[in-house]
Length: 130
Image (tube, rainbow, N blue to C red):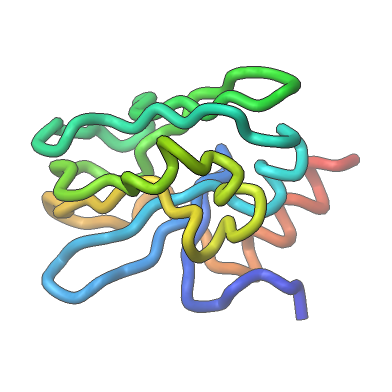
């Protein structure tokens, strides 16, 4: 057991993806990423309607340590953003796999090329730490 939610998929740049009904996905940053960054002080998400390209920067999280780009794990169009993060960026720290989600995307085409299972992401984290 690796402690990662098994219903999510992950990227090597430490984003997670939750598949939603109707071809949409929810995107956030992993617990590993938020822990490494430290206390969040600001989150910038893309505007609804923005077209995203898998692997391209789409958002920014700023912590007491640094600002970090968030990369889109899928191709698609932003359909919603987490408005709560404007007033409570610390939700990314407190609930990275829940209330700390960043955006929802209507996926164009396949959404699996860059995504890892929980087990594969755990292996990646173990090898990255070496």
